[in-house]
Image: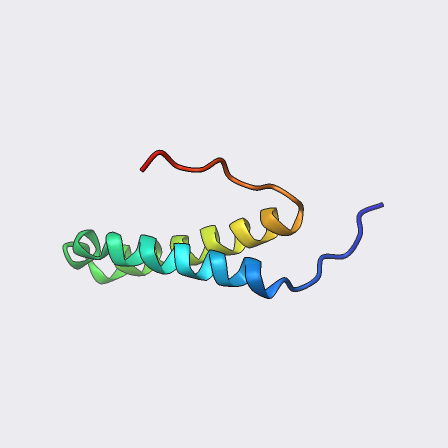
Length: 67
């Protein structure tokens, strides 16, 4: 049986900063999209952030990037 997930503010902060950086980094691409495509892309950013937070609560930690 799975244990319920609880809020982890440090993990949430890490995911928030990574997501904001990713969104800001991709902003030039968003400008060239149609409004519907732009909304889809922004929704995808939020979905990815929520999945990263969920995976972090489950114990998954990404390997450090070489960049």
